Amino acid sequence: MPAARDWEDTIRAVVSHALSQKGCRRGWTVLNHRGHARLNIAAGAGRGRRRQVLLPIPWECDQIDHIRDAVVQVYEEFQQGIEPDACVARMPRADGSRAAEGEFGSGRGTQTGHPGRPRHRGMAAVLAPADWEELIAAFREHKLISGEIKPSTWHRVYRHHMNHVLGVVAAVTPPQNAKQLLETLARIWADKPGGRTRQIQIQSTAALLRWAVAERRLGEDWEPPQDLAVFVGRSRTAKAITTPLEVSHIQALVRAIPDVRWRFAFQLMAAYGLRPEELQHLQIHQGRLWCMYEKVASRGKTRPRVLRPLPCDDWADGWRLEERFPTQELPPMQPGLGGGYVGHYLMNRPLWKELRREYEAKGEKLVPYSCRHGYAHRAHVICDLPPKVVAAAMGHSVQTHLAAYSRWCGDDVVDDAFAKAEQRLGQGLRAQSSAA
Image 1 (cartoon, rainbow, N blue to C red):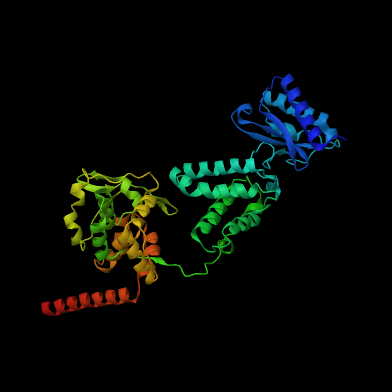
Image 2 (cartoon, rainbow, N blue to C red; image 1 turned 90 degrees about the horizontal axis):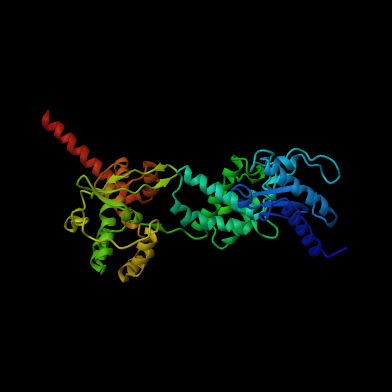
């Protein structure tokens, strides 16, 4: 018996020659897929769509003629407009019996006439790495077309995590279900249980799998559990709370920033509670400064908004931000990466480093978003503005606002709010008494 490599090369050569005799020059190839012959059709040879068809023929040296004839049959019927899956479904097995409906066909595990849908429970485990690439590409298109995310979000967040998925499924022994895939991905960050990157990896992968199962591109074994906590893990260290930046520190940083462009950017973030990314989406409209940024999140898309300085922030009046905006240059930043640019610049400022150490000593964390946190904190504690109003001014939902900013509602804030309420009520009662 010839060596395996020799007879496999012979199969490919025989098939290639037979196809060339029919006018097919390139784009149709055969290979071994778990003991069966699989036909790969490149996009250029498959009317713009790549196809993978599993033939009901063992990948063995004595099956060369059967494989050749099957591929030629698929090619001839494809030229007549018949899909490869439909052609393969009518083929007899090597033993002469007929394959059960959907038993063979698309290498993605499909039913005849329904590309991408699972044959039955668990059969989606036969996906090859190339199939996963196609699945992830379709998932990306779904996320973008539905408006759930922007292209920059895919590039900045999802792309890296989907590459990890591709790396795992390309292993010698790939995962066979959702649990195995998520467990393998969790091991990449085994030393960082509960970490944000690990959390995003698990959540984005689970979203991919849920979508694929709902679309019947994967079988039920790939449905991830609702509770992902076991895969995300629990951090062994207490998480530092990102904290509002104090007014005195804002003023000190403004004085310490040497570049006028970055100083202006920092002043805008501090005075209007801007996200770093929003610096690239500002414009004067109807005589006022607007933020046109639309952030896409699970609770919907934010709307453009007028930027309003807080009534208590008279210390920012001298900055004349609205007046300077039409002529003042901002630092260059790449779209979608505003947070990284701002963070990198601040991390190189000596005063910022010093303040970070001070905040960390108190169990807190100083980040570029601390300007935005400070705006929210002053709006509630000093200005007594209700959450609905502050959320609208900051460009997010009330639910997001309460989830993000309720963490700073400590005993001192509660005591202060009760004292102010008592004072207001007392003034009201005295006014009623005077009127009587």
